[in-house]
Image 1 (cartoon, rainbow, N blue to C red):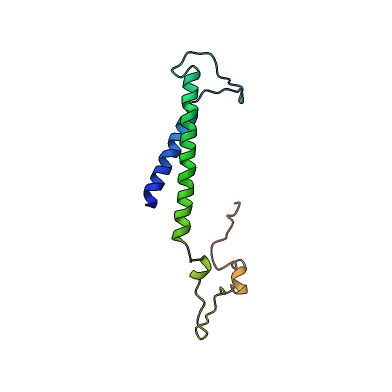
Image 2 (image 1 turned 135 degrees about the horizontal axis):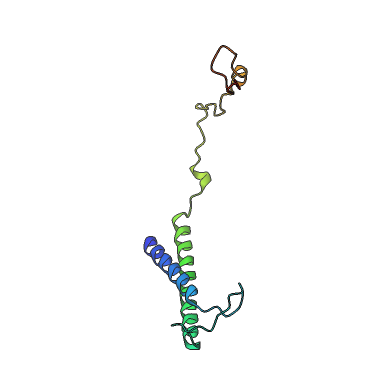
Length: 122
């Protein structure tokens, strides 16, 4: 059920993106303006139809979003991330702290040990 709603949700999202991109720009928000060029989508009736389709797709998108939220909440009801953490038994305490490196590991290698870290300038 959740997969079906998710697929419908994704199709609605793609459809909503397409319909919004098809609409004519009414304001000069980016300085482009609507232009007066003749195109297939000119006239007030086309804008009204696209506006109605945008609203229908937007409402359907919100409904599928709420449905997915409810399905996810029902799926995880009664469980928590904290419930998945298991405390060790009283006799099985193990040291979870990482071992600190020894002091000699932090020093650069001696001259005779390995090749130098920085190549010589000769």
